[in-house]
Each structure stands twice: as structure tokens, then as C-alpha cells.
Length: 325
Image (tube, rainbow, N blue to C red; front, top):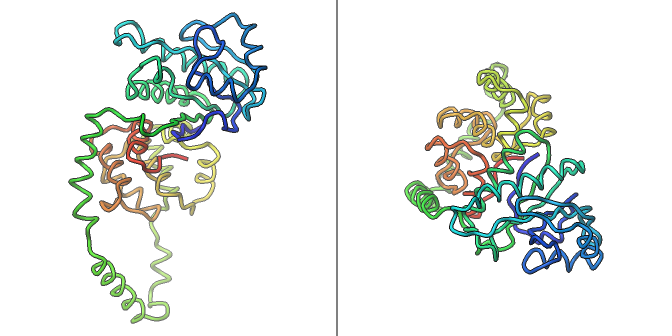
């Protein structure tokens, strides 16, 4: 189900379908369109000649031929003319039409380029937001894994103001904590080791203390879902988590998730920062101001922005791992 933002060559991806940012003729062109036609071979062009073109905002299907993908979904994005000529609506339609066509063909995995962001001139930060919002909305209602393929990181950026705000937040939180000396780290590690050595064996009463363990991550997560009045599906979809992974968490009271997974559930539940910290602690983690990843997630929680896809945009921009499964 999750949406993944990745750097890759879309023609090499082993998915059910790749999406081609085509022109209205469907007879090939430059950029991603040309690369897909070259990789698929002349059979692709031959089939495209039978389709009678494609209107802007619509999508049509062909076989993948020599590509690893079974299908190619050809869609036509809008040419940017300043933003006042229905460009956003047409771009949303291009993504939505492609996703619906993939669903009709029972595609479980689909890879998109950033449509219209090349020679068609759609500003890349706005094109990315349309892509993430449209795909994200679709995935809240449908089970599918979607890859948004960014071929060149240098050609990609989130909104400049948001980037600057996050960068300043990182700078305020990160530098002081991250510059802790190695000597201090070594001192604390040695102090812990000495304390452990000074208390060999099992301390009296430890067994009783273990028996009084508080609720686990899984128990707290399920309790919070009930308290929020959410269904399981609503929660794991908002967390960008695969259904199978959620099933493992639900069925195993002692399940220990990864830190990105635990954070993703805190975002899905729209927990304030103190409660997000509590949920993270149940998984054995904590927010750290020595980690850019943690600080960026904390920034969005502090600003009450719980859109996990927007958070992943920012994490990708700062070259961090993404939230979700």
C-alpha cells in the first residue's frame, strides 16, 4: 500500500506497470517518454499507433514489451502556462486516470515519473505536491504500492520557504546536541559499564519488576486507535504502512517495530509531541536532537502537520529515510 519516493531509472523497475509522461500523439518524444520507448522496443510504438492519441489529463494502456514492467500506462500532463489555465486540475486527472487504469488491470505495484515537470515546465515543487497529494488520497481508499521516481535529486526541491523553515529548525535543535564530544560519549558509556559490573547477577526483586511491565507498543497502539475512533485500516493507511506489517503488530503483543514505523503510527494517530514520545518509548526509541531524521519529524508534529506524504517529501529533500512500511 505505501507510497515510496525513490531515485531510480523507471525503465529498469520490476513493477506491474510504469507510467509514461507522454504527449498527446503517444508516438514518443524526449525525456522519460523517449527513454521508455527505447527500452521497450519498436513494438511499443507500433501498439501506440493503434490508440488514436490521448487527451491531456487522460491515460491509455499498452503492454510493456521489453521492459521489466508488464504494462505501460501512457498519460498526458498539462503544459505549464502560469497556473491559471487549469493546470493543477489536469495534472491531478493525469495521476488519477493512471491509478484507476492500474486498478482496473489489478496492478499491485506502479511507478510514476514526476509528470509535466520536464519540458512541459510545471514547477517541480508544485508538481511534486500534486503527485503526493493525489497518490496519497488514492491510497487511502485502495491497496497498492506506488513508487514516485525522482531520477535526478539535483532537479528536485520542496518549496523553498518550507525547506528554509525546516533547515532553520534543524540548525536550532541539531548543532548543540550533535557536537557533543567523543570524550563525553565515552565517559557516559564507561559509567554505564561500571554500574553494570558492580551489580552482577539478578538484583533482588527484578523478577517482580519485570512482571509489572507496562503495556507494550502493540497494546498502546491498539488502545490509541480505539481512543481516536479509527479503524485499523484507516490507521495503517494514514501511516503509509503495509497491511501485512500491521497484521504482525496486531497479532504479536511483543512486536518491536522499527523507529520509522513507530513514528509513522504517531503521525497517523495525530499525537501531540509528548504522546508521540510515549509511543516511541514503547518501541524502545526516543526522539534525538542528534538526528536530522528525528528533528524533521518533530518539526511537523510541532506544527501540527500530520500529512505523512508531505513529511516524506521533506525527509527525501534532506536525504533521510522515509516514514512508513
